[in-house]
Image 1 (cartoon, rainbow, N blue to C red):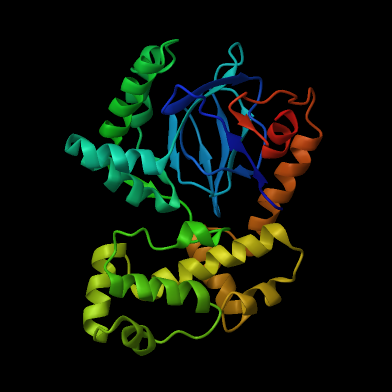
Image 2: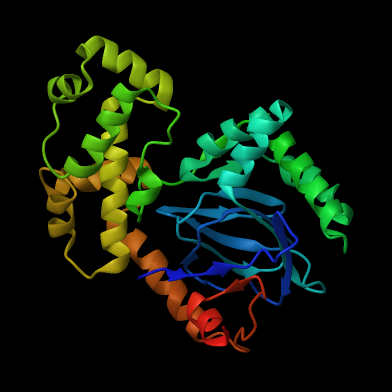
Length: 317
């Protein structure tokens, strides 16, 4: 299933775009856009899809999604049926954040937050409640007040631990590119893994590409990526497999081979270890949700003015 491209219109007088979405039920709308997205979900329970990550979410779910990584939420019930479900969405540009940090070193922590968010981040319980404390300012009619609130929230989140969500390069090669914060040696290894993951990759080959010894590569890789070389390669392969499971009807054995696994049994074992479900169950997550939303009544007919398909925008221009 191909993700729809969405255009986020910031307006001529805003550095960040804030959207307060309220509706009866949050539908499955698989999409991506060039902006970072911080989303707080309120009064809703269901499934959250970030790249190849599929997980349950509940009250005060708070997630940061990087540019061009497909994502959606799909609710199955409201926590309080008497109230609408809601999402507080903050979109911002990564280049703007980095320029701000260059000028104001007080915001250097935001650059680290963007680096950590390369695969999406889910913040621990309590972070969403803290963000709710800023909602009056974040939903202010004054752009400057919204900006101040967004910066305060992002600065606070930069100090918190968070769980990475998607596999490296899940669904889009752009999202798996080196962030620019890794040493050149590690960046060369990441680029090689990104293009050659379907082939056998030996540590000796990667070490030669990096110009480091195998021992040094292993140490530096774990230091900068937070996991071993072997686990990272498997996560890249699983991410590619997830894309094939959702975009195609190819048999699992074919997907295993094209994703770099020696056989279907090994693929199933690794997939279950990473996703806690079988490849077929993963495919069914997307298929069943799409069918449920197609039969939902009433249909969701309106979208945010700041989240419009580029095609429609060009037609007006």
